[in-house]
Every structure is written in C-alpha cells, then in structure tokens.
Length: 44
Image 1 (cartoon, rainbow, N blue to C red):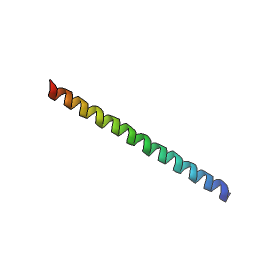
Image 2: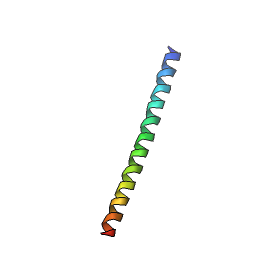
Image 3: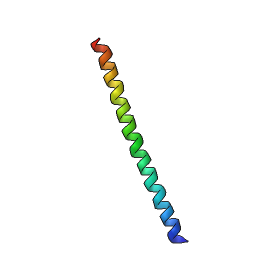
Image 4: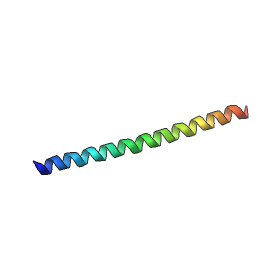
C-alpha cells in the first residue's frame, strides 16, 4: 500500500513537472511570436 502510494505520488509529480515545462515552452513561443508581430508592425 505504501509503495503504491509513493509510486502514485511520484507519477503525479512527473506529470506536474511535464505540464509546467510544457506551459513554459508555450508561453515562451507565444511571447516570441508577439514580439515578432510587434516588430513587424513597427517595420511597416
């Protein structure tokens, strides 16, 4: 029971970490796209 609980906890931590990394990458790409969009508008 204790082992299973620990495995479940570690699995949840891995999922949470993966989600955080994914959102960080997503926001970085979005920020870069926004910056390039603003830059493009300024160039025009």
